[in-house]
Length: 625
Image (tube, rainbow, N blue to C red; front, side, top):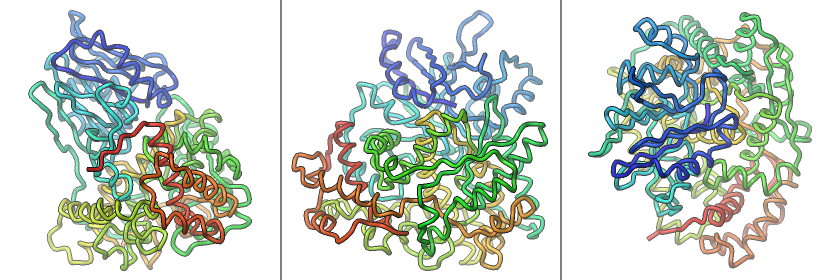
């Protein structure tokens, strides 16, 4: 729930700095449209923007614990959802803790006071939080295990500035929008390094880590990592266990004092969650679950399939699943005019604080969440990370990509001319690309990531490689998409809840052998078997189809027209970064990109447009030497 920000300075009293902290929180107002709060005393200032999903009356933050003498002991600000807060409250109450409300931030604060710095190990769910211990003059920053919730920081000579998004940091006078060579590599490598920020000096708290800030310095501790364990369960037992764990995860993610909806594309991931959520709602005596899908005008009628990315349009399957499950379903229909609106493209950029090559996919997702908020849905279940957990991506088992010498998804991109140097890179100056070496940056990151993969005694080469690919997907691919989903949803005050990120489910399925996840060559057969009784056969056996992207030429013409304007403007901020030959070729193409693979062909133009807006609006200073 919400957005968090703060400032700790061990050499000054921050009480007079309230305007700065408020400006940082104001930059996150979209994450918390239901209220704001701050706590400032001595060396610490914590601020919060609230999305009221639990305990509307007593859940305001920052949460403060006072001594019997009325002095503050510890202060906490939380973004996210502690899905086991009910169980933790019961356990802490038995130990003598007393609560004033039923929110999860208060529970997290009591958990810190009971278990100290190791308390994150007791938390489940999606969360980023900060605790200022008044007694110890110590700040603790915590991020959930898979990095569902973002948390970034900037170290100052005498402390730290932190926030949910870089825009909160940039509202502080110590943080400037400077981008160096590594920052630019992060934008283009499509294999983000955990903990790395785009703006110089900005970092992210690593998923599954805590960061402690004291006057002598900072310290980092990993409180969770993917465990390698032998899997001895039979296929039948494995299927039953997955069903049980997923059911528990869905039930936990439905906990809220506000309506929780479901994203329903008609694919196996979202359909499984929606069916389990609807069943849970009925068992609790609730009304029909509300489900939502996105579609483009004329998309299903003129759909062109792609053999590995999008085999079928979503709309018919979403409708079939909704009818079978019994949800109150809404299709959010977008036309080309909405998708081509430059202001919405600029809003998508601001939501991520960085340019993206995904163009219409970003815009449609942003408009989707805007529609959800307008429909009265401030929280929604999403199938994010199901493909990473269950090996749903084709590159996870395609030998040409899964056995490559770089990340499998990067290998796939490099197999296409339009993305050979990296998705969205082809219009960047060739000399600059050679100097910065985006490809080697990604490949070195891949080699470094492999050294982290836990080993299991007795694993053969094939099993070992399958574990590596899954590890890479969960720790390098998933965080990028989780961050994007969080930013797009929270841009309109909607909390995205991904049950497939549940710790117990992830740990269990991570150790299931690849052959049990893909029986008889069917991707995600394990997940399909676990929910086989809940879905119609056509939905149950529908091949994976990625998030939809516009195929029509009209949108491609819009992109090329805008790109032409920027390319011809020698004063454009992006002009020094463009490759003249590649630009002429793009503008001289016989037709605008259209069809099943148009999004890849448009990606470089989309990236240039976003890069130009970003350089101007954020007043970015490039320091590449």
